[in-house]
Amino acid sequence: MGITVNDVEYVAKLAKLTISEEEMDGYIKKLSSILDYMQQLQEIDTTGVQPTTHVLPLENVFRADEVRPCLPREKVLTNAPDTEDGYFKVPKIL
Image (cartoon, rainbow, N blue to C red; front, side):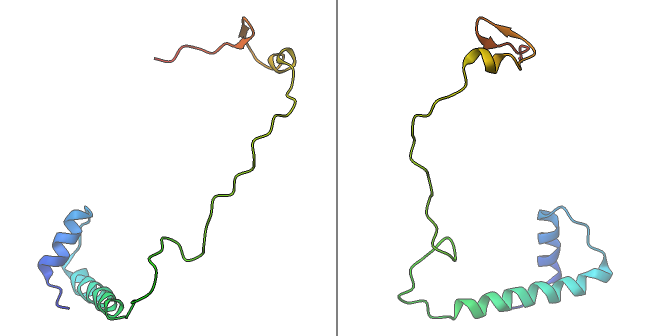
C-alpha cells in the first residue's frame, strides 16, 4: 500500500505530533508495513467463525446476594471524625 508524505503528515496532525524530515522516511515505511499486514489479515477466510470481543470465553461471575449480620451503627460511627443524628457528617461540596 502506498503511503505518502501527506498521509504521514495528516496522521501526525491528528495525533498532534511533530515529525522531522529525517523521521519521515521511517514513518512511511512503518505505516506501509502496518497497512500491508492489515491487508494480509483481510485475505483470511473467516467464514463460519463467530464474531467475538474476547479471545477467551468470558462470563460475569457474581455471587448471590445474601443477608448477613452487619456491625452495629454505634460501633461504626465510633471511628468517624464527626457524626450527626446517627450518620457520618462530611463537609459540603458544591
